[in-house]
Length: 451
Image (cartoon, rainbow, N blue to C red; front, side, top):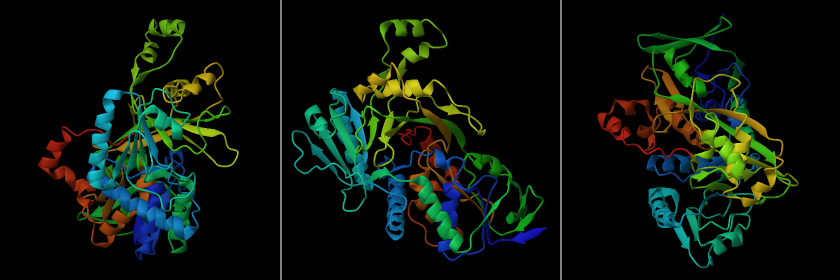
């Protein structure tokens, strides 16, 4: 048994769904989207659901600006069914010696196209916190608040040790599931089909794709194949004899009920920018330090723990994330979860939000889950040709899949239909690894992709 399609997309996560949306928007109707799982159900539904245009990589700033532009168009045309807000990201430090560096780094990012940096050191005459909902008529760039009194005037729940806070403004969050479903439903109205199936082979003749094979025994004749397989990107690439330069990392998060109201319900995404040690009582610390299996809990932990409110109305839920241990592994489902993670994350958050200590004696019941980040070494995505005619890849969007989905889908469509591509396109193409100068640059690449 066989069928035909103009394009076959393997993977119905946010990247595959966005690819289907923008390709169908470009006029291609006979598109088959395949996945052995329901759409948006593997990694896409494990997202933090946040977005930002604040990157130290000019090409990433350009891509994210384009993606956010497209999301805003979709929000306007849909009546904002995915509840896109512009609350921003708030990076907080208690280290006086870092304030000047924070301002310098912010101005560099501004110069890359992320918007202006505004500094407020004694008063904030021109500063206004973001409204909880909506995204219209909000500033871009970032506001640097210097001094604890000024910071806690607007964010009174933060630590009295905070000396500077950088409020990134073209940032916030949305409902990833609703965004994904809106993209998928729109694509389906244009004729895109979804089939629950597992890909078992890609047929290539004379270095050109001519079809795919499914676990059902069915063959689909198609001149174009798109690898949007998320954490299985590399596995699917090997079906074409292409070894994609990606790996997967397991990242966890927890949601808890903040019954004490430690996190302001109108808060932006809060991020602690300093390394720290977990707060333990003296006896606890001694016992942990004397056990080889637990002494790591008394050592230095990295910066980057972040938290945000979830829900509206009477919701008291908060989402906490902290990638304090990178775990490179082959993807298995469901992933193995670290049962220590909730307590570690809650204790780590106390540096930013001191009242979190009130939960130490009786921790709220956590909802622990996680998903895989698939990434390249430099944490730029892969978008474009796989080196086999008719074969394309879209993925390796580690930690930024939701925020980049529209921009990446738009870019992939330009590759496939032969439209003019933006200036940042070569930075995300697989062919970049054929450039000796790029490979040399990779040797000293700074990992700025994660929070």
